[in-house]
Each structure stands twice: as C-alpha cells, then as structure tokens.
Length: 501
Image 1 (cartoon, rainbow, N blue to C red):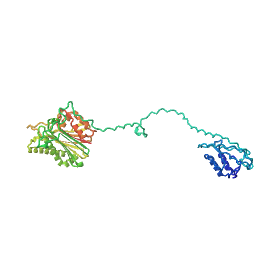
Image 2: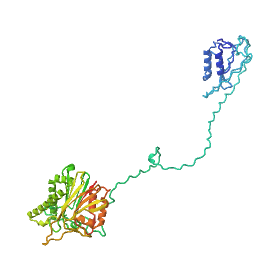
Image 3: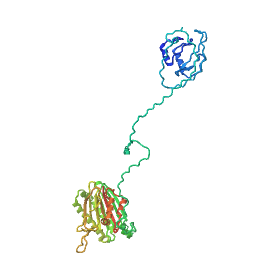
Image 4: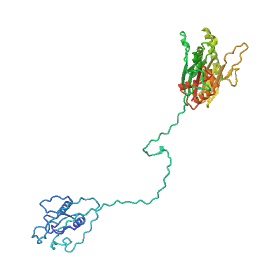
C-alpha cells in the first residue's frame, strides 16, 4: 500500500467508504505507512472517548458529519516547501466537540457515495502526479444532529364489537369450583343430626300430678342382726351381647319411699357360658305386700332360679337353638316348681310363714348366639311381657289356665276360688317368641305393667323414646324413662328391656 494517494486495495477502500464516507486525500506524505492496522487504529480513535493527544503525532479533531457520524478531521499540512509546493493556509482547528452518547438503535443502510468528480484525487486510476486539490476551507462547526424522536407506540384501535348482553349467573356447586376467592368463608353444610330421643323424659303423664314426692323420703328401719336384708332404693344395670343390648332398672315405689318401706321387687341378671354358646338369664321377683319380709323371699327366688338354670344352661341353650318348644316348657316348668317348693321349705325351717313366698317370679332366657332369634319367657304370678315393634306395644303376656280378660281392666281376672275357699297356686306361664331387628322386648313386674296397660300416655311416651330408629338409651336415660310417674300407680317398678340391633 502506498504512503500517499489511492490505496492499493480498492475493495477495502470501498468497504470503508460505505461505512464512514469518502475519505479526504492527503496533501503531503504521511509520517508512517498507511496500512490496514493504521486505519483500524484511526477508526478506534474516532469512536473512542476524546483523550489528550501526545506530541508524537498531529492532533486530530472529530467533526460530526452531515449524517451525524463523526469523521476524522483533515490532517495539518506539513511545513511549506513540500513536494507539491506551498501548502494552502489552514485555519486553526476547531475545538473538539464532545462526542454524543451513542444510542443503540438500528442503523439505516449507509448511502451510496457520490460518483467522483473529475479532478478528484481519489477517483479510480488517478496517479500521484495529479494536481493538488484546492485549499481546504476551515471546517465549520455544526451542531450535533438531533436525535430522531422516539417512535410513538403503535396503538391498535379496538374494532367495534357489539356489547354482549350480561350473562345470567348460573348456580353452581361451590365444591366443584377450581378457583379460590378471598372473602368471608361460607359456613359448612350442616350434617344430618344423629337420631336421639327428644329432650328429657317428662316427670309424669296423665291429667293430674302424682300425690307423692318424686324423690326418696325415708329409709326402712334396719335390724342390726339382719343387715343382709337391707335393699337399696334403686338398682341399675346393663350389658351388650352381640346383637342384644340389655337395660335393667328397679326402683322403689313412691308409696314405699314415703312410708320408709323396703323395695319388694328383686332383679337378677346372669350369663352362663362363653361366646356364642352363652345363655343370659333375666329374673324378676315381687314380694307380697301383706307378708312381712317378702322382699327377702323375692331375692331368694331370683337366686334359686338362677342357680337351677345355670346347672342346666348347656341343655337349655341347645333346646332353644333347636326350637324344642315342648321340651323347654316341661323342663322350665319343673325348674320353677322346684324353686318355689324349696323357698317354702326354707321358710318353714326358719320359722317363717310359708305363705310369705313371692307373689311372682318371671324370667327371660336369651341365647347369645347371633344366629338364634328365639326368646323364651317363663314364670308364675302377675307381671308383664311386652314387645315394642314398629312403634306399637304388643302385650305378649300368656293367659293363665282358667283366667279371662275383661275389657276395661288392667289385666286378666284370676280364676274363681275352689269349693274349700282356697286359691289355687299361681299358674305356670310360658311363651317363646321370635325377635326381629328393631324390636324391644320388655319383662317387667306388676308395678310397671299396670300403668303401661292403664295409661296410654305412658305407653306413647316410652314408644316414642325407645322405638327404632332411636338407639337404646344409656343407663341414666333408661332410669329416667322408667321413673315417669302416673297418678294412682305408686308401687315398685322393675323393667328389663332387650333391644335387637
């Protein structure tokens, strides 16, 4: 590459002209070789921030071009008497203009350089002997080109769209919603309430309140030599075997509480055997009001019959599962007669009145086998056997031989006395019934059976609280139900109820 005039490589010169414009020819030979490296250094100097020049080279000032791109200023000519004659007078170089902060924006394509005019020192084919160009005019300081205004954001006008009618909100299940919304939390849906008896049992039913106070008043007189004869005012018990739920309550009557007399009803519950082979016995006995010490006889009767059933429990359970009704009736009849005979004999040996035997003894046998739904009742004397099925009470009390039922009475009429005026011994009663799920079978003394037969309000109140789908009551609730009082009925009450689940 020559040190003056046209470079040796036209293609490179064309590329630089397109990028930075047509260069101005030198008026004097350069101090150094004009190479690509020198030009790269010059370009790097032009695009770099202004810095202080050293004394080794001529000062170069940048003058912004018409396109707003800084171009190198003309170099100062050498001293007069150069190779081409006296150099033209050159004015003082303008103060360097601070380079504008480069803005990174897309560069428009560089304009094509104008065609070289005749006599241009840089046109193609011009040699070193061309005449020198006219003296350069002092460069005129031009203000930096203003930055083009930022392009306004392109706003797209929305097309005219018909406003749809407001949609009618459709009800939907909030549980199916997939979004969550802040705000008050809706209360959860109330669960279906469990079925329970409504409220507390009434204190009494009927037209008028009972005469006596509902709470115990006096205890019976105690004998220091016979403390075993003392009986509690109330007995409460319960159990569950398989599908059976049992509740037991025995309460002293209002009349006995007021007068300080002992409770004459006795109750006993016993289980013989294990697991499904077990046999449950419920025994209820009532002493005669006219006989002294009848409450002791009632307790003895329950113990004697329980002992007899326990010794034959395996045979009895087998007969019940096999539905041998005849064998059961005859066998239980013998056990009952033997029990009552032993009680009379024991009373005579103790010097007591043999007629003081209990007025009634009633029992219920319940096999624990869940596949057996036979329930067996047997006994002697007055009392009650009821079944609550489908909200209705059924009187299952079997009639004694020779007895009759008179409409309007609380129970059956006992048979007429014999020719000698003696009353026949209490007849044996037996009944086997088949239970269903939801049934409630009640074995009770006469003090509970009489108001249940004579006061419909009591029967309705108990049916409402004990019938399905109500679950069996707890012990405290069952005791409250048994103590619902009725005016005119103040005897002891004993009830054993079995719920079939």
